Every structure is written in C-alpha cells, then in structure tokens.
Image (tube, rainbow, N blue to C red; front, top):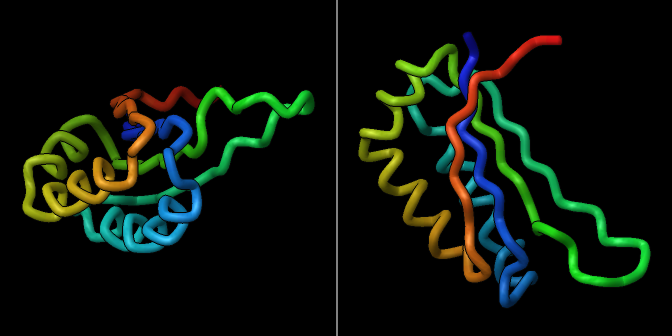
Length: 102
C-alpha cells in the first residue's frame, strides 16, 4: 500500500522567508530514495481574514511503509529534515500515513 509522509506547516513567523526556502526544500525532498511523487500545497486564506489553520502541506509518496522507513534513515533525509525545521518557525507536524484509494 502506498505510504506518504506529510509535513503540515503551521503559520511561519515570516512567510516570505518560508517561501524563499521552499524551492530548496522541494529539491531536497526529491533526493529522498524511493520517492515516487511529491505534492506541495498552500492553504487558502480564510474568508473572514483570520489566520489559516496551517500554512502549507508537503506530501512525499513512497511505494510502501518499508520504502518510507528506509528513506528517513538516510543522509538525504537528514538534509531534508534540517531544512524542514529551519523553515518551520511556526511549528510543523510530520505524519506517516497509508494512502487509501477510494
């Protein structure tokens, strides 16, 4: 079953700085061994102008849980996670999930 690692970024202290480093983060994610697909998405602003519940999400897909587990133990993962925490000035949650086709 396909597995994905999702990074849910809370609202950063400096959105411009986050965006300036986002392309490098994507490039580092692409270097993770076994990646089969990436998706990056920016959360829409709320219609009432209040703060969004999160700022961005990044989904990294792998063939299965074992492939994702192997990937996170590599030097490439160390570089990627370092960038994740550098950009995540508002906080971040990292999730491993099984993708269910419906």
